[in-house]
Length: 218
Image 1 (cartoon, rainbow, N blue to C red):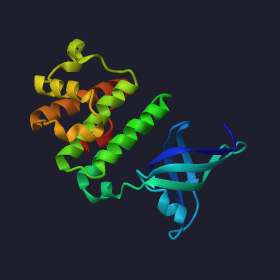
Image 2 (cartoon, rainbow, N blue to C red):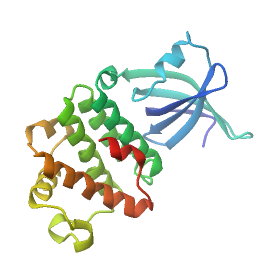
Image 3 (tube, rainbow, N blue to C red):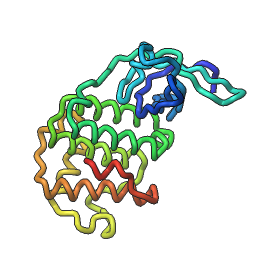
Image 4 (cartoon, rainbow, N blue to C red):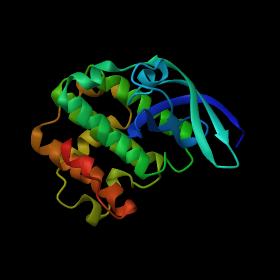
């Protein structure tokens, strides 16, 4: 890895570090997950730009001796401020970020992972409550595909499809060929939504060895 990194990035999580600095986690299209320090006080432009779900070109300096990373600039192209305006949107976005981090950014398929995350977050930015939940399930389903974890639905094993009704499985088949922005066009009743949610979560939790807490809120 070079000292200077410049690539497309999505901010997944930001935590306070000391009195004025922050630690941020990014999904990048070429380097996978990067954790880097953001220096600057509350009035810093850089600090305001490095916020959850913002996306753009990032510049990061890597100190190879200390193996530390520092954000030097972030040119945000997509602020996605609408995500923070609705509880269901932010819960869905948080579950997506938690999933990406838990699976280390997609196991090397960083470009595909970044494309999926960006498309779903774009759709979430203006989604209503019901669509927000469906978008989270859409992400989990397609994420399992990126990781190579799921079977074709027509050949799903009894253990993975147990308790999953025809409505949920039919909906998952339909969304395989849809973009995130088209999800609102496909209806899904509440019972089938719950079945689809747990079906997709079970695929990922079996691979991860645990369930993620953020999944409970979608």
